[in-house]
Length: 154
Image (cartoon, rainbow, N blue to C red):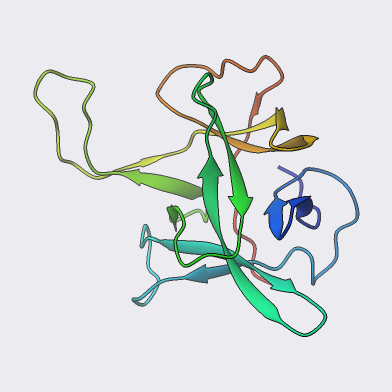
């Protein structure tokens, strides 16, 4: 996947990961906040810092869900909560599954999930953004293309 452009404004202090556009060191800088020393598959919050005229706000990534779709849009919003992510040994971003309820008896094994796509989405505005597909099926949105999200250190 190409580097994300500066987070696109979706509303008052709400930003999304759009594909394309100008990329620079400042706009492409995100933080992985965790309460332990980061290791393979350590979970934490992916954040972006919103710089205002006289303030800075930490904005963790969280999903915006449309109950009529299986495609969720990750957005950065000033908050104290968000969706935990992890990075594997190849620096690919994933979500950790702790409970597999696809069988009659749930399995409690930890498993990284890689359900990242780039899709044309609508979360206040129409953009081509990073998206997450809920469930093991294919995205309902016909514009979605499978991608890996890879962490690159600057």
